[in-house]
Image 1 (cartoon, rainbow, N blue to C red):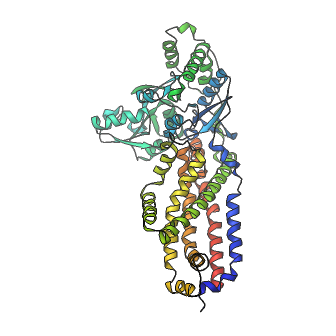
Image 2 (image 1 turned 135 degrees about the vertical axis):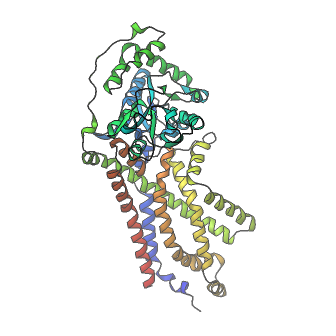
Length: 516
């Protein structure tokens, strides 16, 4: 008796070589691209975290050289590093995860337009304020007379950036004025949505509000501030001695005019700052030097096309990180998936139950939550590097889905063929590797390909744990030029360029099998 699986045993070498080539391409990709995730720096470095997606004037990729960052917080970090005798090194981190990342030890200092607040003082070492700002309301020009304050916005949608003083103010105003807060992950879309009429006002600090008005003709900032806040730096609680040294450096820079030079260069100096510095220096206003500095030229004079050309190498580097991370994660998912599926088919009942629980828990909880738990939740037990956490998070998540594909494929092989192999004297191991496995792999190839394409896109979620992959680099680019059109088209094209060859290779293998 001959079964279909036994007929093809002698013709597997061509397929095996193709699969080995795919595996080697994934595993031997240049892993030096992972260095951007950041690691333990030398003792002479001051590692500081910020979010370049926030853009100018805080932190943004330099339009002339996107591999470096510029902004007033970049200069404040450099000032502090020089005062400490160190070299500054920037670590890209999502704005909403800066607090958790500095506690975890991903860097020494967080600086990215971070606003002071009592909650942060309770769990972090917070520097003295180095800049004072006002919370102001932005509305459409035609609504300037109607919406002067939060009380005028009853029943209206008001946008802001999450994890800010403005967000706290809107939460409080929600019950008092029946306002509907709309929280965004970036400070670009609140203003574009206001212009489109999706929201009725935006509440943010004056630095962001002035930039939003410059980028969106038809918007205007109200003159009357609704609150006053301060920008500060954040350190882990055990870093209080380092925080105290930084405070001394900041006070000295307030007195000799170095901070004023920085803020004048970015056109941010105003009458609020001398009053703040005088209070911090004990009312010694005469100790504050007066300087004159020419503001920086605006990088926005370049066209979006010119900026795209300059950003393109950074996008290519981020795309390399995406494909390498996706390949390694998929390799882990395939290996784990095969082991889990084999265990659920062949193992004893207790192990089958345990594997089933794993599959259901992983499939029933969000990947984003799993990444947060791996990276931040386990930090007290094991501090995983960002790229390792990303690899494990994606790999272990997709292993659950892969295992279901392989299990169903194994169980789809006709029982008659398995009985025939046993009649010929094959052991269960031989049946798995020579009869059942090859046929199951054919059945699983198409859904495996779909999973790889899905994983390629889901890799964008790892930006929440400080990995700068293609989507995150694109969002930084889009925020810094104030438009998603060109960056979005370019990013979509690069994802297609990454996923289409894989689908084409899978179809070629399937056609080869049909010919056999």
